[in-house]
Length: 395
Image (cartoon, rainbow, N blue to C red; front, side):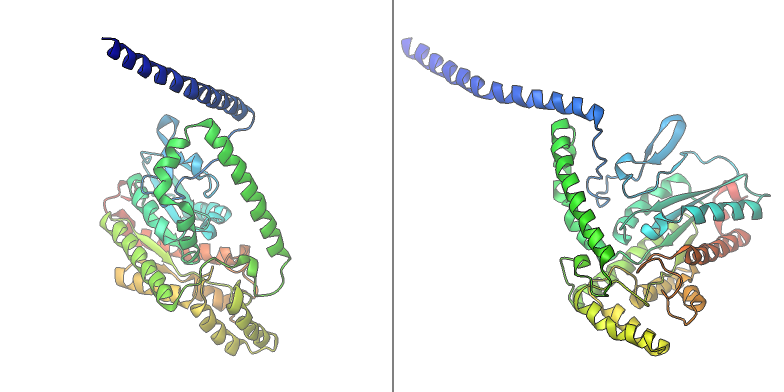
């Protein structure tokens, strides 16, 4: 009997010692959690897109009040804020625009496009909605997931303009640490965790801003501060282009299966002054020299060749545009040949001479050309009735 009592007393002593050890830790974390929540009232936590769009459970749009959908607040750092009714009103033309930053920056052109379509189609539509789904640094790997989401929102037409981010998106995928996404979501419920996370995020942002400032000061084509961590082998480059084609075909097939017309655009790239890091940038100096001597045709041929084989690159090349044209032909989707139109509009046929803001983003005049080409294809769809199959608003 005394032996059992001794065992019970020993067990109780261990339990009590454990409580003495654990309780202060729990109290400390509890106080820190309370303090962190008080701090968040004065300084709200940073929006964080856990998984960075690579997670299939991550939605671009979330329910809002009064039956509306709006851009997920966690994705506000990468997307324009958009809002639309979950159930599309009658006599509404609803257009979704998918792409990267080049689409994200098109809000002014979309307002012009909306006005033009409303004027041209007053007999059929009371309003036109153009929902901007352009994500900063988004390539087709993540756009496929957005495409699968937006078919739920009754689109009449989808515009797709993508080709600059296929290599950068690989780096984004590695940084996303998708294997830790469930743990990040769970820990993200803690204000203390959010406070620590935001502290390191702000330090990282400050470092990136310093690097950005240095890039702004750089004048040469080789830009080591912009270099990616990984140089792709020729086989890996081919693999990225195969994935690009597969993703485009997947989206084309998805929209076709839902009876949604797609307008696919070729993607021009600044060949007058591209952004190529390392050895590729050094090689491109010979192209710049040709342009300075007025040898535009020879320079353009050499520039296209170098950009096509550059690894990595943060802008489209002939390889991407050949795939875009092939997918458009194969799947019989409307093609807005932005690349061809920009080349024709440049004074010497060299994209980037007058119509770009940087290595991949068009300036206002270039964006106007882009908008008018997509507008023409949209009107062609509406006149031909392609957008009316199974869509009450167009009947």
